[in-house]
Image 1 (spheres, rainbow, N blue to C red):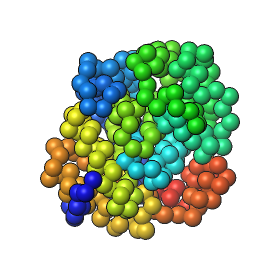
Image 2: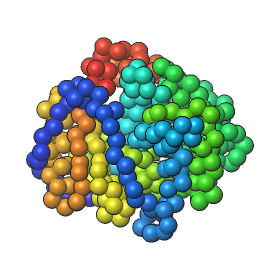
Image 3: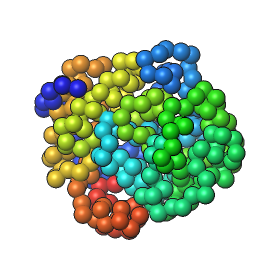
Length: 294
C-alpha cells in the first residue's frame, strides 16, 4: 500500500471516447475459490456460465464487474449512470447490487423493492420476482442493507444464485455487477465471474493505492490480465489522464497485466442534485457535464 505512483501512458476522457465501455468484451477463462488466497476447482464457472449465456438462444450476455479499492469513489453512481446510458443505446440492462450487506443501488434510483437478493439466496423467491424496474427499463437486483449473513457467499449460496440466473425468464444482454468496495471474498468472486473488470478510482492518492492492491490480488493470485479504469470526480480531462498515468506506470512495472483507460467523469454539482432526488444524473440532467461523459 506504500507504492509510489508516477507518470506513465496517456489516455482519453470518457466524453472523448464516446461509450467505450460497451464497445466489446474479452473472455476470462480463469476460476478461483471464494476464499482469498486458496486455490480450489473453478467454483465461479457455473455462475459465470449462467450469467453470461442466454439460456433461450445461447447468445452471449456481457458481464462487467465494477469495483473499487476504496469506498466513497462514486462507484455505485457510475454503475447506475452507465446502466441508463447503455439502455438508451438499446441494451437490455440488469444491475446486480453485489454489495450484499450494504447495498444502495435501489436507494440511488429511488426504488422501493419488496424483496432482495437474500430472498433469492434463501430460495424463498425466484429471481424474476425480486427484480425491480428502474429508469429506461433497466432492472435491478437489490441487495440487503445492514445484514451480515451474506458478506461471504457459501458454496451452496453460489449454487443457488447460479440456479436463479439459469431460470431467469427474460435475460439481459448487459449485466453490471456493482461490487462492494475493498477486497472481500465476494468482490474477488464476482470479479472472476465477469467478462470484464472495471475499476473506478478518483484522484485521491488513497484511492489509487487501494485500487492497485485490488488489481494486484486479482492478477497475481487469480491470474486476471485485463482491467479497465475509469477516473471519477476529476477537475478536468487532463487530470483523469494524469491519474491513469500514475497507476499504469506502477502496473506496467510490477504486474503482468493490461490496464486500459476507459475515461473520466468530471466533478459536477448536478450529480449531488440528482442523488438528492434519488435519480441518475443521466436521467434527470441529461445535459450535465457528468451525463455527457457517460
